[in-house]
Amino acid sequence: MSRVLHLAEQLIAQRSVTPEDGQCQAIVEARLKPLGFACETIVSGPDDFRVRNLWAKRPGRSGRTLVFAGHTDVVPTGPLDHWKSDPFVPSHRDGMLYGRGAADMKTSIAAFTVAVEEFLAKTPDPSLGIAYLLTSDEEGPSVDGTVVVCEQLRQRGEKLDFCIVGEPTSVEQLGDMIKNGRRGSLTGKLTVKGIQAHIAYPQLGRNPIHMALPALAEMAATEWDRGNDFFPPTSWQVSNIHGGTGAGNIIPGSVVIDFNFRFASVSTAEDLQKRVHAILDRHQVDYELQWTVGGQPFLTTPGELVGAVQSAIRGVTGLQTELSTTGGTSDGRFISRICPQVIEFGPVNASIHKIDEHVRVADLEPLKDIYRGVLENLDRP
Image 1 (tube, rainbow, N blue to C red):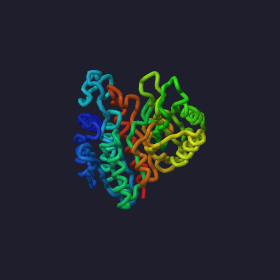
Image 2 (image 1 turned 90 degrees about the vertical axis):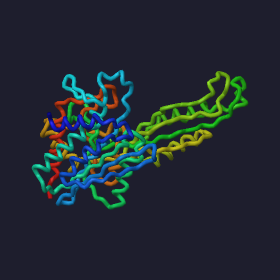
Image 3 (image 1 turned 90 degrees about the horizontal axis):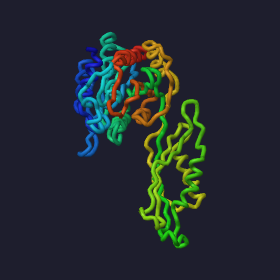
Image 4 (image 1 turned 180 degrees about the vertical axis):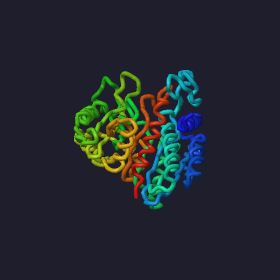
């Protein structure tokens, strides 16, 4: 059996629904210590939501460090009777490896671990330092995981140069896409205040839904920015509207609107907030607005890391990979605060978070070879 496949099956067999880790990080740590990695477990979070993080590092002669980052937690399985096989018993059908976390992202962790083992067997004294950052809080709130480790590393003055996050980024075939950045996420909870009254006597009330609609229409029609060469234009979307008592004869006293920006690097959360407030004020809306910045945008422009990954993918698959910043947020948003070059690369993402999550078994060895190729491409004085 392939060493990558064996390790991937070991990890999938761990019931690590967020924030649980099972024994995933211990399994990886047991393979890293004999290679000379100094391993540190960082536990964070309240007693009812304990998060386990692993920081492991093997210094190199050059002082430059490549970090492999990932998460050992997985999303809930959904109805077990909808799965064709137990999601925590690795299973094979038609050339696919099935199990929760197979694509997102235990296969990546297995692949870059074996890649590191092979690289160090061939190059036992590399110039390049190698590190691991694993968390069990990526699929959850993401407040006690990678962000905590990165803050501790920042306080220590730890210098990181490159990072590959093993997120599943491929679309149709392994290596056809990598993420060299992600959009920021800004959420607003808007409460528009009116006066409740009988619907037959509108002069005695003030309908907050009527007050909100013109402002919402303007926000929906607003061009917030035009994006740039790497990011699409910033988007604004309403996700929920809650108003009324359920009765058909009452003007509601308030309406709550949830909305979200996915914003490009050409905009800032602060500027978007100011523009929203200006629209609401111009429409004379009586409101309260709570903001949550879920993540800042980050971008790694083509350079040493992007080139090393593209070259490795081309050498293994023959593909000229596409750079993309689409999709949701990832822990790359935290790592980019302390590491200037961050990309995401991993297996095909078609089944992530779905029933019967899976990866192609035939992709496991090439995935490992690409990660090893990146190590070789970056290993210079």
